[in-house]
Image (tube, rainbow, N blue to C red; front, side):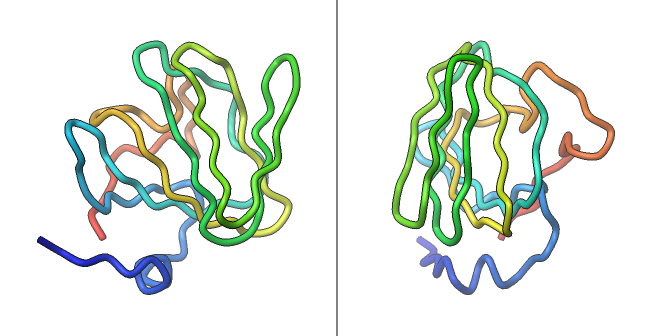
Length: 120
């Protein structure tokens, strides 16, 4: 069993939009990601996705609205719901999703689709 300190784990990398695997729970992966700017519109047909903001703030836009999350807040995006994430300033977030889920879901983006997700 490994203890993860979120402050230390986030300090160990600088890249935006490149998730790091922090652990696994019952077929779900716990990922840490930093981002700033806007991601790509996408959806995950076969899995829900949870964003928990550790530091900063982010907006999740949907085709019919949006929600803003701040430190300590989370949102679960149901499978099949198209969304895009954005942050005006750097945001640190913990993601929970099914193992093997591509970060850009049904979309491919040359700069933002993560080919691999190194471990913390």
